[in-house]
Image (cartoon, rainbow, N blue to C red):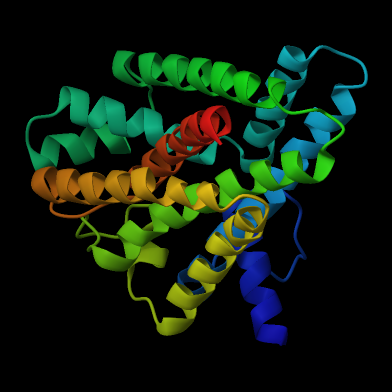
Length: 262
């Protein structure tokens, strides 16, 4: 049990800016095991985003509350995944060989492709989430909270699936994501799927059609894995961050469509 608690706090420290006990470090072994709790971190981030949205809704209109909830998610994670998305768009947009793409993604500076991608990302999140939540009575706190937690957990599960089924692209140890990419046991895979799918399962008890969100997410996973393997023979941590962010948008859009027709 003590080891599992340490693995959880390792995941919390690596994927968020939430303070953790001082004895927790970036041990490569624990970072590798921490992938089992990646979707669980989505529960935490989603819950915080929901709380910010719900509390601010008593003071402001829904669109301002949505903006504040998005800001809270960025602050909690330290823009960890958004940074990956920007790096991926810079790398694949400006590089035409594996070496060049990886070099650009490693560069800490953000280029035009990355900036444009982030602008469209947040614009899409803002309008999609605003449209979705405006269709739900704000008194339905449980449903709204479940939607926040579900799209955060599913997006992380979609991203980590690439880690489970593909190989790490870089040959050296110069990436922040290298420790989580070495090997995955049934505990990492089982834990990720349990925490990734449980919120959706609860949501499906309310309306079974919500399970249809898995179809576009599966397509995103298949295409992303194919695309990364084609260009860089695998994935990097930035690739996982980009897929996670795109998966969030896919979830919001799918929920919006389902809410319209169910």
